[in-house]
Length: 103
Image (cartoon, rainbow, N blue to C red; front, side, top):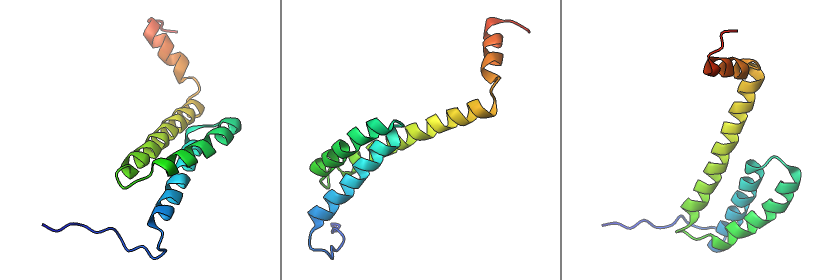
């Protein structure tokens, strides 16, 4: 049975590089998940520091999943906004159908 080895680290600081990458991922999560500039300003440093603190080889998958959840939320929000702009009367038409009104 072969064990996999981590990639060669040319910097000599694998923990520092990994923590920096995790911090960037935390900041990206905060910027992706919120629209308000104030919320972004408050949460970006917190998530960046938090991601850097909890980063290990065992937790990097969970950090990536956290970002993917934020990215999915952003995509759903953007799709909803785009559909509302493309079909502004669709909401009223659906309400009429649900109420059983014909006009």
